[in-house]
Length: 163
Image (cartoon, rainbow, N blue to C red; front, side, top):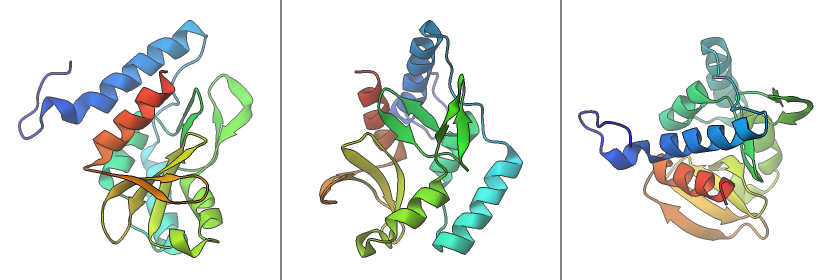
């Protein structure tokens, strides 16, 4: 387990430990996590999210993108700062969060939600007004669970990717 940092409990690092496990699994298959998002990519993302989605991205999500700019493993996808090729698979991409959310906005139920990713059955979301992390059924877009924070949401997603 990662050593504690003042103000953060050990559980605050759980998703990072799971990312290390995913990276180890990917290495077994000659793959790896996505490279970190660059400061330029993240700044551009913040500006595009504000302009096109009228959304302020959660700081925890931006921190995630500083570790890995998007995620695609075993059916779990977390959107990237922009559409990027998947490491080791130049013919495949991870969609950008702004582009994906513009599509979701066709459904008025997603106007105050930011969809961070999915696993093919569930949507991992952040409530722009409520500041809550939630899981929705991909179809018919019904709320499944409210979660206490980003770490718990990512822990759930990454645990699923390791099954």
